[in-house]
Length: 116
Image (cartoon, helix red, strand yellow):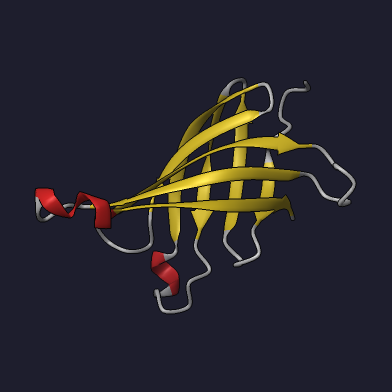
């Protein structure tokens, strides 16, 4: 697949944005949360990750303190929807205060980003 296919701006239905720069098999950029309850100056986070053909993984801090997020996913190039899509699983982890609270500190969700 061509070099740079993940590069560019992506947006999910919630309005979160990815601004990705690709250099070989490395990815970097920013993750911008659309959460309105978070101050605008706190919504943008640096992200870093890797790609392998049409798969991607990256990590970023969340707009909420003490939370880290990671995504793994696959790129679908214009699969009939009219847009390129990155279909991801998002894993969020909140800092633990009690070892027995681990089940409450982990959240897994599906996220679909379309090229903006």
